[in-house]
Length: 350
Ligand code: GA4
Image (tube, rainbow, N blue to C red; front, side, top):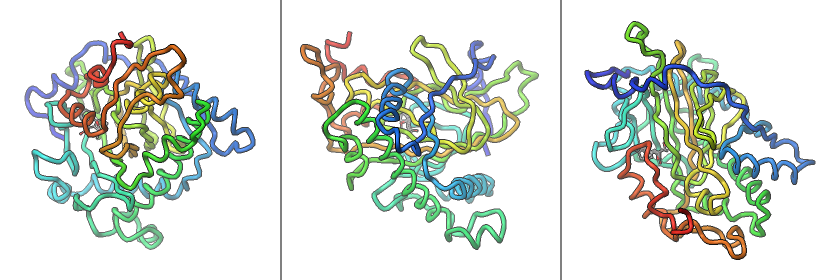
């Protein structure tokens, strides 16, 4: 359960600009099943990454039944008594992983959200977080058809989504005309890849209308540090993205599709050609929003820098070279809304 303490309402409901929902976004769509038109699909992927850093994927091949089972199991997890969810908590201080409510990161950010954050290894969700062992499916019929527990189900989901993520990353490399088509996928498929899975539950907005607050911040504005984020939600909207001109638009929910975000690391690798998209989740619905996000990250020791093929002749690198560990250490010291890439820019950027 998410309960607001005194003073917290001001943090998640204050700015007047957040009162009215922004206009709907015209989200670029890419159909992965259009195999015959691969070059055109790759170009569309690259164009969307350049313009918005964000697009929707249809024809993704992840079975609808798996999506439905994960959504039901996630809803069932968040409906558990608080003490059972707390069993998935990791001791405060060190790890960002485990169950948490309201608190985002370690630097004072809060939102109208509770979540599970899991490290992902080559084999699936890392074992550091204790997850409920019993079936979480709603009906007996469903339990028979589903894997034994939440972890197994999430692992099945991670495997399917990671495959699809790699298809998208390959299309990005093709759309950029890079010779090495696996330049991004190899990072996410590396046995040491620092990937994560986040399961978010945004409970319905509490009755705050009388206080003049229609929209609460579920997850404040930020960019994702990784290479790529792949999001799937139930059919409750709330996700908003920031366009190049700084205006915000709301993304209509689509439970049958995935939404792709370019992350900071990919902005660096592409020398700023792809845009790490600023986004947030606002809560103004009487229905809960449940989203599951796979973050594809590089291995900790990986050196990140603009790819030579993407630094045009006579052009300069906009970012210096750094390791993923260096970037993450710096990122985890920041507040959610901060620009994290500015510490890694070269003089050419300004
Ligand atoms: C944003 C993307 C992912 O959700 C996340 C977040 C992480 C966290 O929740 O612990 C961070 C945030 C995210 C960026 C800056 C730091 C770290 C909270 C925060 C204030 C898991 C990630 O990798 O970076």
